[in-house]
Image (cartoon, rainbow, N blue to C red; front, side, top):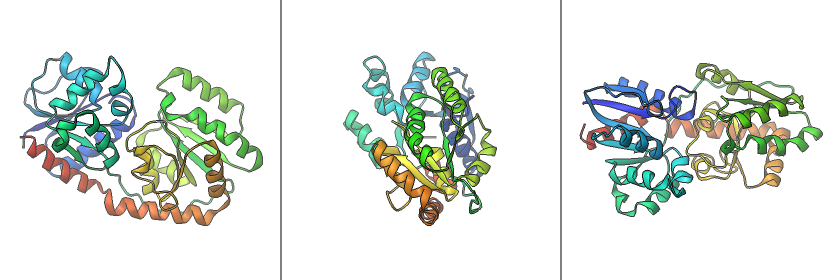
Length: 323
């Protein structure tokens, strides 16, 4: 098999795409696939022997591909904001659609995302491939916290709706004991400033800053509840890691989250601030519910989302693309 280059936006930053690409590379190497990772947003050069590009985020990859006047086959992985936001933009939309039209394959993480992509490029239906992300499965432990610990892992930017999470928890924090830790790099300074000020005025809110990926396991292990409050997202690595750790999930009702979390079975899904408060209160007050949901989520991750399966499917896709 030839040399495959994974072109990842903002690879130099600790974001979900970096975590996904690093995991893919490790397991692809286990299968003997020669891969290199470059940052498309830093405009890194690709090796001369590149036979296939695997781009992440249609609009950002398309910008890289066209700016460098490349003529190499590629597959594209849809990451969320490219389809949920950029494709509707009057300036960014045409670039995003060109990327989809010319890709050898369009890789999506779930059926809901496949339907969204198909709506924009109906003639490319046969090129759209559904292959979920995967996640390593850590050893399980039962948290033993006197005060319930909530964890919100996310890059600090508006689409993650961290302001909403804090605001929705304000009233609960007045009525019951809880602690929320937000962890992730500041990607939008205005949001970072707001979060730091919010944490300074609330003894239950803690912003931990950016954590190394290898340190995240301990944070999940110490959490009772993992939150995802995003307005828009593909399949979240943070959600999957929380599920793999056996933690109770409370997530916003968006397609990426729904592809992973089934309400009342592998977590709780909220629609608005009232349902968030009601669901969060249940999780805070019912340890047995937290354990039931967390263990069911962990079982699902073990059965369907192992990295070895993901790597095998990607290798098959690369071969079909002509590598």
